[in-house]
Length: 124
Image (cartoon, rainbow, N blue to C red; front, side, top):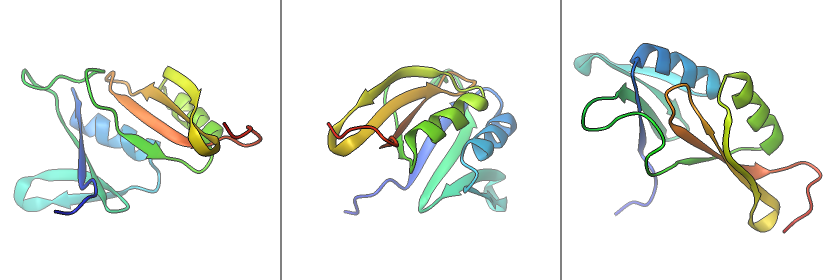
């Protein structure tokens, strides 16, 4: 068994708008296409960020698990997501080793976790 996250699925009402928004949210992401499946996704490091249609089985919105993305500068990342229209949902909260965490919400109501150091913040 391998212990790493290979893919994260994000359910949205409009897949193309979702791909575009998430590409702006994660500018280092590489957009990839699987022609055989008529499927586009974003690759961030070794993780596939797969933007898929919400449906009657899995709706978009805050309803369960939240993936936390490690960021280099917590405040800069939070400002970046707020500028994209992802309002703060929970936090910020000081956690271990001088790190902070929070959740923001994408335009479809899904939660995105951010976790990283905050410049000038004391260690907890």
